[in-house]
Structure formats: structure tokens, C-alpha cells
Length: 420
Ligand code: EPU
Image (cartoon, rainbow, N blue to C red; front, side):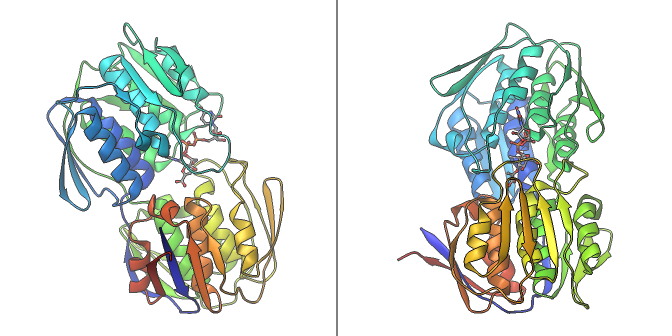
């Protein structure tokens, strides 16, 4: 077990490179299972624990994985031998549910253990199941696993009841080899949805409209290997933008798509933060006192739920009252109790956090209650007076590659230590 130890109060300055998007990579790797001919060479994969988990699951299914370097993987799914994914790794992570759509699409059957993931609220998969059934699959839950089977998959018109990133991607994957045309409505439009569609198209799929209200998928006979590079991670980039603002620093954040960061940039600008956009960079700095703002999370292009927790740390340290309303997950304010240990003045009422900015946070022993809560605590440690110890950092390692090294390079005093 490890912990992060941060001696706060350093102003962050310099440049940081952003990795490939976690939530794109964790769908692209399972989707690589669809290549019945040739290998997929996938670049810009983040070096995170969720990806390592997926590598093990792919290997267990019979795929050959060749790790070219830290961020490049070659996946050969022509050697696949099994359609059941029921290991501890599958249970540990959320994105393992993409194997249901991928194996169903290619082999017309799959058995995949129900997924885990961050404890941020009830995480149903009814919309995934609704989509698979509409394509002609029989779906049952047996002994904690989802079992799907189909004689054949046929294109269908599917209108999702809720906007779901996972269901949109999973049903899109399942429909790529279905006979005829599938149309998906009330879909998620997140950049990673578009990235997975682009990856599938590079493999020979015929998907149009990803990123808009309707995705149309014309089924094709088979998919083949391809070369692909994952888009930059909008949430990792946003985390560094917030860290720059919180420490009143000046950071050039490189390898980003500024358009994907617009909702975050807009809120930071409203607070008084300065942002300069380049073609694939954003510079974030502070040259005036910041003020509180109100935030309501929403599906893309709205303010991402995944960045509201780091924002709550920033808002704790600026003058005035801010209100964060979480509309996607019902339990995504668990980190607030940890922030309060550091002196934050926050009241949680249901899905709303009412934050009154304080003059200073002070170092304490805290824990990462989930992935983005962990990022929130790191930023709190960076701005707090004195030393902060963050425990349960396995949550952070699931989604942020080498977080302590990146912050150290920016001037933070942060290190990883074994818990005694
Ligand atoms: N929902 C349903 N039924 C379903 C699926 C979802 O009711 O079948 C509801 C959920 O309960 C939630 C809402 O729909 O209220 C949105 O859930 P969604 O399916 O979009 O979430 P997800 O696919 O499970 C992904 C990310 C999350 C991110 C959400 C929302 C991955 C692996 N995870 O989860 O990322 O919060 O989309 O953008 O892509 C994170 O990176 O920290 C993280 C939690």
C-alpha cells in the first residue's frame, strides 16, 4: 500500500504533457477484440492501472499483446479463444463491460462478470442491455455475470432512456457487425465516444454521426486491424488547469484539444483565471484574486461530472460562495468530508455542495475515496499549509499516469511512500 506525501504551498510553473484519454482507451482496447484479421497498433495509451487490467483481461481471452513502449500496444485478437471474461480484473473495473458488446458482436455470445469501478453512485447497465436486446440478443444475469447470446444480430432503431457514455459506446460496438443499419438516439456526445467511433471506422466499420444527436451504423461483414492514436485526456488536462489556478501558478498544458476543454475554460475564466489557447496547448495562469462560481454538471458539452471534485478544491480556496450541483452521480461528494479535515467550509445537501471559500487549507491525513476525489485531494495538498498525506491512492493510479512525477516537474514537493 502506498501513499502520497505533499508539502504544500509551492507555486506550480512550467510545462506538462497530457496523456491519451483514459475513457477512450478503456473502450478502444476491448473494441480491438473485433479485429478478426490483422493486428491493432494503438498509440497514446495512458500508462494507468485500468489499462493494465484490460491488458490482463485481453491476454486471458487469448489475445496476444505486444507492449511496444509505455504508451503503445499491439493487440492481436485473431488468436482469441474464449468468450467468457470472469476474472478479478473484470470485477474491479467499470470499462470491462465493453467486452460484452465486443464479444457479442464478433462471436454472437459472451459471458462477462458484472463490472466494478468508482463508488460514486448506483451504476446500472439497463440501457446497455436494452440496446443488445434490440439488436436481437438474449440477455440474462447469472451468478453475477452478464450472459448474452444471439443467433444473429440485426440493425435496429434504439432510443436510450438516459444519456449514457457506456451504453452509447457498448451498443455502437455491438452494432458494427450487425446485419443492416442501426440508429442510436439520445446518445452521449463525449469526445471519447467520437474517438471510439473513429477507431472502429479505422478497422473498417461504417459509423456516422458520433458526436451528434444520432449515430448511424451500417453493419459490415468483418473488421480488421489498424493503426490508431488515442485522443488526449480532457479530464487529466482539466486537472492540471485547476492545479495551475489553485496554486496561482502558470502552466503550459501540452497535447490537448482546446475545444474539448471549453466548458472548463469558461468556468475558470468566469472565476478570473487567465487562459491562452494554442493549437494543441492551453496556458493557464492567475494574475488577480479569483471569485466563486456556480457549477452544474451535465453530459458533454456541459461541465463534466469527472472534473467537479477537483473544482470543489479550487472553489474552497477562493473568496465567496460557490455551489456545485452534481446531476449525473448521486454520491460524488464523498471527498468533501476529506476536504473538511483540511479546513474547507462546505455543506452538502443531497447532490449539492455549498462551498464558502476559506483563506487557507491546512495539511492533514486524508484518503482518496475514488479516482477524481483523489485528484481533488492532491490539489488540496498542493495548496495547503504544511504536509498532507493521501491514502488509498490505488484509486488515483487507476486513471492518472505518474501523477507525482508530473507535479514534481512543475515544482511541487510531492512523493510516493510505502504505508508503514
Ligand atoms: N445510467 C443508467 N443506465 C445505464 C447506464 C447509465 O441509468 O444503463 C445512468 C447512470 O446511473 C448515470 C448516467 O446514466 O446516472 C450516466 O452514466 P454513464 O453510463 O454515462 O456512465 P459510465 O459510462 O458508467 C463513464 C465514465 C465515467 C463518467 C461517466 C459520465 C468510463 C469508464 N467511465 O461512466 O468516468 O463519470 O461516463 O461522463 O468511461 C471517471 O473517469 O472518473 C469516471 C467515473
